[in-house]
Length: 192
Image (cartoon, rainbow, N blue to C red):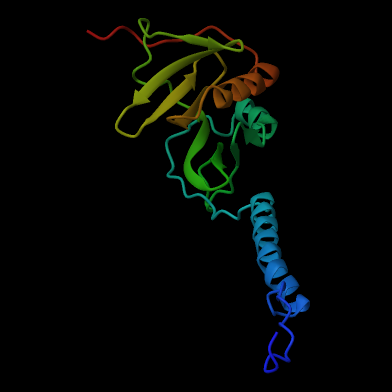
């Protein structure tokens, strides 16, 4: 060591030079923000979405006030798979119920007390679902099908959008079977 080197070497700095409280805050803030976003997303998924009342057009339903319809309508389930019961815009069509997904979209619509569908004749294919005879009229343009219960005191139509799966038809069939006795089908004549 020389006479001009009276200074001791400076110790190496191991820290960043920032106060520990600042470092803790810099780490905690992003973590807290991520947790807050996750909690908000979970709560948003749990809260029911308020849908606007559903507007449906009226169709002729001469037996809408029949005993069959007044018995069936209160017995229908509030949920059909992912679909929940919808409120209808007043004046609502008589003997009509509807269900929608929580985020809206095309509804499932049930109408009771209808006339026999013109397409339903002696050659029509019938599908039995939970002891109910159904006749289907598909509408590929609308990506929907309307199923008619054809073995009860009145005709009941259930219109379901494509991709709804079998649950709506099964659940409505259960309500029909439990509340309305089966009767002989009355198909129309064969077309000429």
